[in-house]
Image 1 (cartoon, one colour):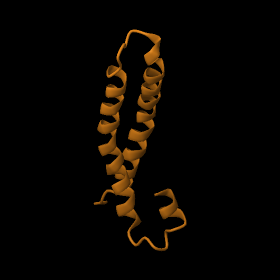
Image 2 (spheres, one colour):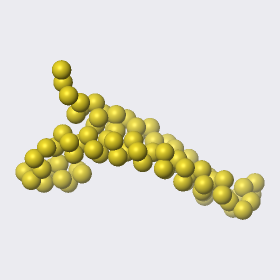
Image 3 (cartoon, rainbow, N blue to C red):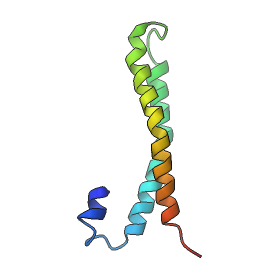
Length: 84
């Protein structure tokens, strides 16, 4: 989307629609990411050992990035709403 709105802006007739679609897509993908993270954490054979530590750390990093994704998606949707 970044490429489409920067270099390809002359071919996109409605950039507001593309930006809003990106925000909605991010909002829709967050529950999927959360569910997959839970499966990765709780789907281990032995969750009480250090074998699952990489999965838990990956899940923590994913959860930390949610804040940035929610902020950016909210901003995309807010900037493209109809003024009135």
